[in-house]
Amino acid sequence: MARRRRYVIAGLAAVAVFGSVAASAATLGGVTSGSLGADVTTVAACDTDGVTLAYTTAFAAGGYQVTSVTVSGINAACTGQNLRLALTDTAGATGTTLFSSASQAVAGTTATVTVTPTVVTAAAVKGAAVIIGS
View 1 (spheres, rainbow, N blue to C red):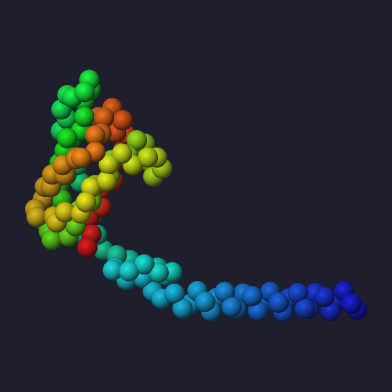
View 2: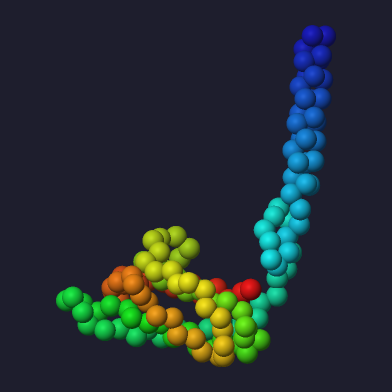
């Protein structure tokens, strides 16, 4: 009998904890394209077919360094939105960020990002990420 009572009390405690967690999560609000919260929404992309990157390098200090990156193939629907570029030392989502640009407004179908003041050795660049959004 005491054993059954413990199970009932444990079950009620679990329901109470679950209820309070669900209630607090419900107060976090929804996601909109300008905010972040605990919800799901679809945000339409202005460029659905991707972009192309071209690197400009210069020989300095005994090796080639990336001096700029040209992002081309940007859809015209992205005009007026902000572009950011990151260069990484791996081709995936993990790794070290070698360079991260400031936001710059997209003014056409091509944008050039100057890699400065950071010195980025061309051989170290294995991946890149381009983010275009408001």
